[in-house]
Image (cartoon, rainbow, N blue to C red; front, side, top):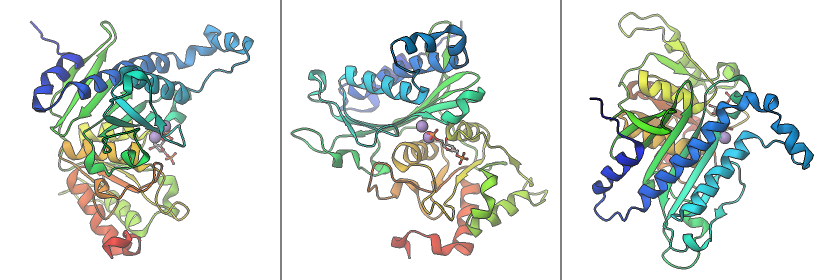
Amino acid sequence: MSVVKTLGQFIIEKQKDFPYAKGELSRLLRDIGIASKIVNREVNKAGLVDILGEVGTYNTHGESQKKLDVFANDQFISALTIGGECCIVVSEENDEPVYISSDVSKNARYIVAIDPLDGSSNIDVNVSVGTIFSIYRRLSTEGPAKIEDALQNGTEQVAAGYVVYGSSTMLVYTTGKGVNGFTLDPSIGEFCLSHPDMKIPKDGFIYSLNEGNYVHFPQGVKNYLKYCQAEDIETKRPYSSRYIGSMIADVHRNLLKGGIFIYPSTASAPRGKLRLVYEGNPMAFIIEQAGGKASNGFQRILDTEVESLHQRSPIFMGSENMVLKVEELMSIHSPELAPKEMM
Ligand code: AHG
Ligand code: MN
Ligand code: MN
């Protein structure tokens, strides 16, 4: 007899790992799981919108079809509002924090940061996209939640996860006690535990970065690329290059197979492109919990001082030995890019 464990069952079972937990975090994770199933449904029929005529229907009312990243943002915010455990949502899609002040949220103790749809430029071409989320405990103890509650460093995350809408849909999350992955079984509409206690290999043979930006890369990254492409039988080089262009999908593949994902600073973007609060920190938490390493080229991403909601960070994450190698080359060839506090 095969025993299927659903995400809901797993979350309840794990609640006992947190002696003082009152079930709020479990409910929050459940709400995120529900919203992601709705987003999954829409992502799956993205190509059908024109055929089904929904755009026409909306046009009659003077509303254009919402972009899927806005749709996903609305779904997560409304699930978190109805759920009642979240007081602030920080989202890529909203310049300002979204304060939730419904009756049910009066005593809400959690802050959620989300990238509702990561890799959204891949939607039109039927390539994997995802959702990233990060959860913090509220700091202030009375009155309405404040922006400071949302500006916490990555080390303070109580949970983080992502959903990858791929050839199958998976939800992967951590509460700081390892990483577990669940695959959506569409026939029963449930995420089922399929990848317990995920671990990233210490060594990997895949590098993922947008090589088109090569001329703008720091010298340390250019040298690391040369290293990846050089022939060396003992270290199984040259490595393979794989770049999907959805961070989630690239990091997910590397988590399973071993590899490194890099989005460095460039001449025109000195802090890189990807955002720290809802992209870098949650993925760094997961990668570290899976035994990997997540760096800004010089130091742990999670140790970065969070100063603003949409701040960016260079990202080098994946198999530990690959990240160590690129850090070594960054410190030799691009020391001028090291964060000021390290100099
Ligand atoms: P988003 O769709 O949330 O804006 O994120 C896109 C990100 C990330 O998923 C991906 O790794 C990166 O942008 C791709 O950027 P390039 O096109 O510059 O390679
Ligand atoms: Mn993104
Ligand atoms: Mn996005």
